[in-house]
Structures are given as structure tokens and as C-alpha cells.
Image (cartoon, rainbow over the protein chains, first blue to last red):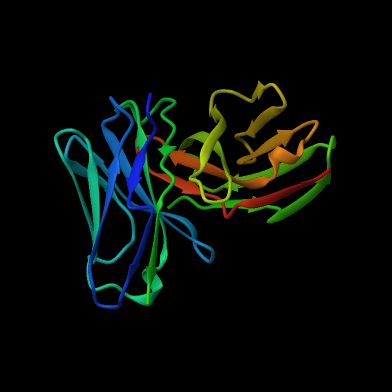
Length: 116
Length: 112
């Protein structure tokens, strides 16, 4: 099975611009989550989508948004970019709807966003 | 919400030695604890996990232990090899939420 695919791998944007990141989950996985990874804050949860609906949301401002399509692919959008948004953005998919059992996250290799 | 603390932040061992990384969590409703290994330029990769109804789990050179009463869990790597060098993250998931809380990471360096 192919793993989680994230595009692009690298992005350089200017403050004030907006950006869209893309994620294709493992085939058959319906849950897609997004995490921000920075040296100072570590891995922080952004949001989770399941069957095109946002199911969980982290503590990020409204400039961070996402969506999921009927084929489970997901996109994340950041508007009005700030310098502090520079980070590795990781997408992860998980296999079962169950939030009770063993449903680990399977991560992609991330999109490295640099805001100048 | 849940808070996961991880120690140490860096760990240097000689090849062949054992390495132990410890994590504590705060929410007693957490019921699933995976461990991830992240190599440079890659996303975190699951290496082992444990559910709250199990005290210990082993997979070849890697083992995880969980103490629910004390709310801590540990990763044990035996017979370390240079390719074990990476950053390791522990995580906890609160029951009924598909949202993971991660520790701050441990950079493991295995010296040949």
C-alpha cells in the first residue's frame, strides 16, 4: 500500500500571502489529521477530518482551515501568513473510525513551509 | 486537556547498550499510547504502541511498558545500533477522541 503523500514538500511564501497544502491518505483510510511541528512547540494538533466533516479542532487561529473531499484527500489552507507559521506541516491518516481501539496515525513526510 | 511530558530530551549511548525513554501523561481517560521514530527529513513512523489494558508489549529489540496508576509509560530499546539514531516521540490519545498529544521528543544518538 502506498503511504500518506503530501505535496508540495517545500514552500517559500511571503508574509501576508496564503498557502494550500495537500494530503492523500493511505487507501481506505477515512480519517485525516493535520499537525504542525516546530522546534519550540513540538507536534501540535491542528484538526481532524472524517468523511468530509471536521471532527476535532486544535487551538489554532481561524487563519488555519482545512477540508476533506469525498475521496478522503485533504487540503489545509493558511491565510495571511505570519513569520511564526514557518513549520513542518504533517498530515496523518488512520484506518478505522473507532476512537477506542488501536488506530495509530500514519504520517506523511510533511510540507516544509518557510514564511519570509 | 491532556499533557504529555517526555524525558530525557537527548540521550547518547554506545552501540549495543540499552536506551530508555520515559513519558508521563495527565489525563486518566487516555487509553492508547503509540511511540514514533522520526528521521531527518521524514515524518514520524510508528514503531510500537500499547493500549491501556496492557502492561507491557515487546517487538524484537523494542518494548514498551505502561503503568496506568502512575500515568507513565516507557520505551526500551535493547542492543542499540547506529541506525536507531533518530528523534523518538511518545504520544497519548484520550478515549473517544482521535486526537493525539505528543511528548517533546528525545534525540537518541547511538555511537558506533
